[in-house]
Image (cartoon, rainbow, N blue to C red; front, side):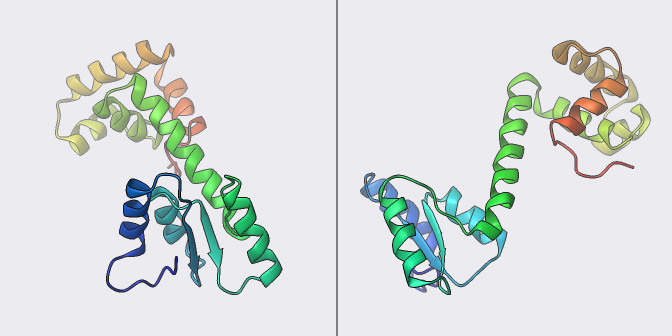
Amino acid sequence: MDSNISDCGSKEATQQINESSPGVKVAMLTDSKDEEELFSAIESGATGYLLKDMKIGDLVESIDLIERGEVVVPPSLAGKLVRKVTLKTKEAEVKDVLSQRETEILKLLAKGATNKEIAETLFITENTAKVHLKHILEKLQLRNRQQAAAYAVKQGLVTEIR
C-alpha cells in the first residue's frame, strides 16, 4: 500500500484491511524514513515498511519475507523500532505492578524530584507522595528512593536525569 493515500489515511486503511481480511499481510510502501511514521504503520498492523528507493531485488525479497510472516523494516530504522517496542514492553510490565499515579511518581523520582516537588507537580500533598513512594518500594521490593530511581532508569521509564 502506498503511504500517500489521499481519500483514507494509510493507517486507517491498514486497520480496515486487517479487520476485514485477517490473513492478508499489509506492507507500507513509502518514501519516508521518519521513525514516527514507521511506528504508526507497525502499530496499525502493517507487517512491512518498505522504502520506495530500495532496489527491485530487495523489494521482491522483502515481499517474500512478509508473505512468510516476517516483519520487514529498513535496517536504518530497525534499531529504533526495537528500542521503542522494548520501552513499551518495560512500561507495560511496570504498569502491571504499579498504578498510573505510582508510575508517574516513579518517573519524577528517577528525574531527581523531591517529595515536595513530586507533590507540587502532581497537585497532591507531600504526605500523599510519601505514601505512594512507600507503596512503590513495597511493590517493587526495593529499600529506598535511590533504588527506585535506579530501577526506573534501568526499565527505561526516563530518558533524562537531572
